[in-house]
Image 1 (cartoon, one colour):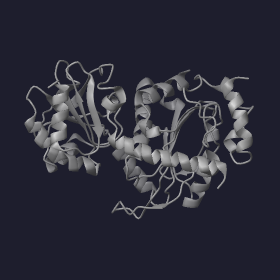
Image 2: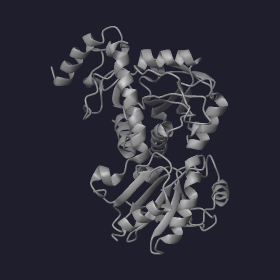
Image 3: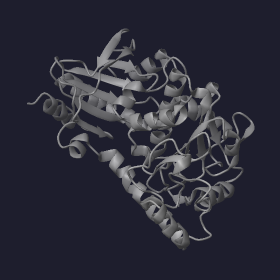
Image 4: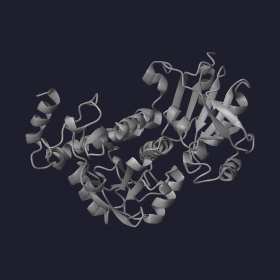
Length: 227
Length: 180
């Protein structure tokens, strides 16, 4: 038993019954991954990390008018996932979306765009309508015509909150936004990016997603897709 | 509050701090004075607009001190940054390559003319370029706008910071990259 597995098995009782992402121990491990273990062991984090299954979620894409199911990508596409909201006032969300967008550009240039899915889940469905998301895509340089980018919009704020908490271990709550004139509420949130391989196993969790070195992330995606 | 919520709570507090770092972090602090490896130059198209021309620019420009402002037309602080950039552009040595770059998808989700209009509306009067696939912006590892960067003649980033800066700060950064 290597150290990581040992740590994880210690971590499981501590969060017993609460984290679905840790319940897959045994069915998903380092042997299902393309990349080696990350420099930083994140196995005790509340969110999915290296070797865990990417949560199975099915969420509407309001622009494409279809429900996107992560399970359907298994065997087909690697997934680069993040969560955000368009009215994010502090630059964190554009920095997350920018990383996915650059990875999308490189995937198109190198011809593996059809083997990759870019999923950006809004936790602010009340304000992030199809129109708002479409405009945001243009602004941020996202290529919706490539067919591999989906904005995911939960049916309600509560549904999104529940999904992020139960599936991703991320707690989202509305906070007042007194310091921002144009906003009635904002969301302090965790800037997480997840990279899962074609088998639906998480290869990398980037917990400081907005600061992740862009070329390193793009290189990780390429190795996972083509590896 | 169970343990898992506590962990997530701590994590989000960490990110609030991270957001602050994003706004104020500088390469010199992180890398001990300058980036270790030179940035590999990349040639991008320039945009016909006031003070600019229809052509190309290589960033960083080999053998010259290069000042780069990375902006986006949707970004309000980028508008706010424009007057100080204009002042800095006037004050720095003519030998410095002084250029603004947008990573927006010019040619796909917006046109050069739209960038030029924004440029004119905000008093731009120096070289402005498009990085439509975000290749250059990624190479410079910029993900937050605006970001200003001073690169020395060997291609090493000597100063980089996101957020809105005064003309004095920008000029001083350029002089640092010129080893003055």
